[in-house]
Image (cartoon, rainbow, N blue to C red; front, side):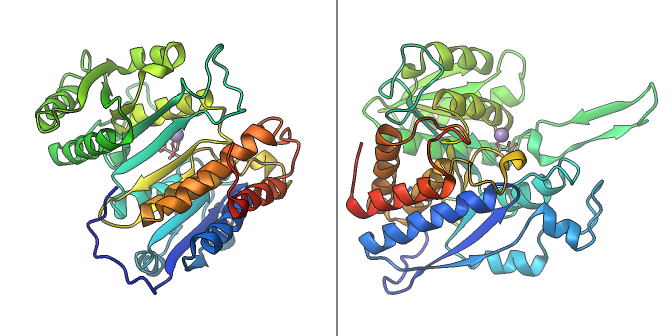
Length: 375
Ligand code: IPM
Ligand code: MN
């Protein structure tokens, strides 16, 4: 996306904050950084990285309560330091020794919200040579992008619980959307759709037949903003029907825009049809500020430290990071190198079944970047 930030001085290196995180996160990020080094060499740009150890392990080591949040995962000083970077590169969050939600909220969601990364951009792209579970579908059929709103909806934490543990217990979790939040997301999606392919089909995914308040806000905003984009065809799917079409006719889609919760769910479905969590990358984007890129899968604790996890999703996230920095050619080159490796080298994308170790896959991609190899 076009930046509205002031142009950076060419001689200044990009500053990239690196958060390995939990489980296999540090391993996959390490391979991404290898590829970054190769891309910088070829693309003749300079960069610096700084690692931040935000993780479940550090939380526990500092005396954090494993059952409930008791100390911050990221301190305010660290938060201020992070803000000075040009991009954040994140591995994974989630540690089974800490109750669910502590790291997710204290790290991932905190960064998304506080840095106002209101777009979660998740391409669904079947690379050549990758097996999809969808019979009869190939790379030409599975190539679309999901724009997930990333700061509102069921993720705001609004709601509560009364009479907990009694038969009268009441729990609410509020789906909160604002006109401002919906509109900026929809505008981003229209802009993206306009330039990503000749199809120019933007599908709003929601559940207007049941969510008559929030769905209506999305639907009205979509149509109002859409008037400014006469070249983009407007389309609407209920989220349940979208799940059906993503499996049956994925070739139908070009760009999808949706709310945070539906986006969370359908992007896992998208990850599966593009070959699994080993390859699915995403970006948490603030189009006017600091963005963060990550593989969309989890921390896979059972594979941690074994050098078997697939780093391609993290490397794909790096390609997105490069594009967001304005290094389009480098991003394209990394993506082409991933396609070379999936088409020519890997036996499978699954952890432990690739025919190569994590570090070897990183080496293969870095080498392909240096040599400019394509599928
Ligand atoms: C994702 C994840 C997160 C989310 C979790 C870990 C909070 O599932 O990035 O899709 O729900 O957004
Ligand atoms: Mn998810």
